[in-house]
Amino acid sequence: MWVKIKKWFLANILRKKYYRTGKCKACGKCCTQIYVKHYKHVVQDEKEFKKLQYLHSFYAHLKVIGKDDIGLIFECQNLDPETHKCKIHKFRPAICRRYPQEELFSMGGALSEDCGYKMEPIIPFKEILSKLKK
Image: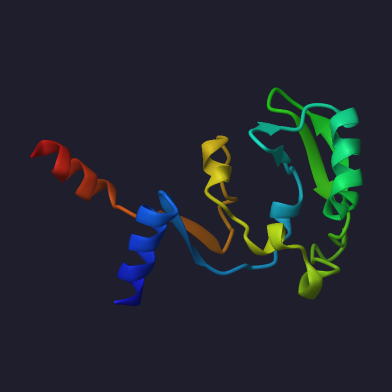
């Protein structure tokens, strides 16, 4: 019963298409190769990122490690390079607690194969297909 209510709320009130299942395996892969989306676009240059760092303390923990066609690529400096564990896990920011989010997929991203989380469609494809056939 609870799952049906949750799915209804996510789909009809929040307008989400996916919901998160599973749990974190603490592999640290989500803390590397990060894109930062601010408002409606991915951060493209270091000048823009410096402004974000000034406005939001969370961004002080990110380090630019590259750039590609999508935008700047970051890595979290709170990730221990030897253990691949978060050094501030109990006090991690809300953005980390909400990972993964649906936006990841809207930007063309994906979860690593060994990630403990899965993003499940709220309305299964078979259900959508059957409605279209009617």
